[in-house]
Length: 262
Figure (cartoon, rainbow, N blue to C red):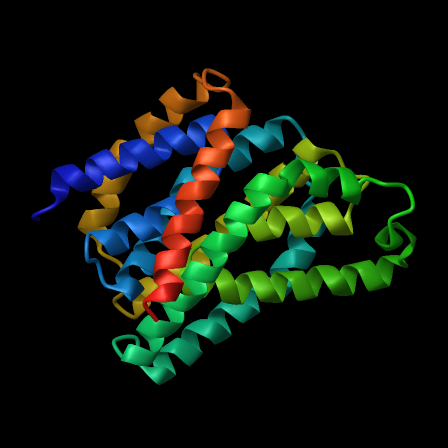
């Protein structure tokens, strides 16, 4: 494969950044694959399985620390898994190789990259806002909150299946808003626990339609797994106030380019 070394290096770089910052790999990896002229559907399908593998270790780590609320994970999945399967069927019906699906992926991906950049920039104010005692969602009945969680899962299922990103930025901030009294570590653990089965099912669905490059996936993992390990041991080496804005600018630029060319 022409870009084998480049893919390994890309996996190493993305894994390193994810290990240092916790920023979702999909928001970084999918645009890189598009830059390498990987077809949009293949980039998304491959990245979904890449995300499932790289986040699986996070589930084990968070479960050991009791940082996962499995009830919330299940309620999210009640919306996201059916939505993902229906989205796959809809994309297959339109035709994965058609210009319509390619345009849909690139446009949605661009919007989600811009959204992710905004979340990175405004994460702390949003978290503080969600934890205010007078926040309206704290007074919602449990049934209403559960319904809102299922709807959140529906949105995540569609967005993640189309773009391979969104489970991290969109999912975490939605949970912060819906469950403001839950600790940050528990919300993050719950989001990761939900993201693994969602990305796995969506990725396998794409694979069933021939949208996964297995050789490419292997190259990405060869680089990313040691990258994540190394990055996780250097957390804090670069000040967060400098690193996150730089990432946000990069994602904003990539998202803007994708939206602008449509």
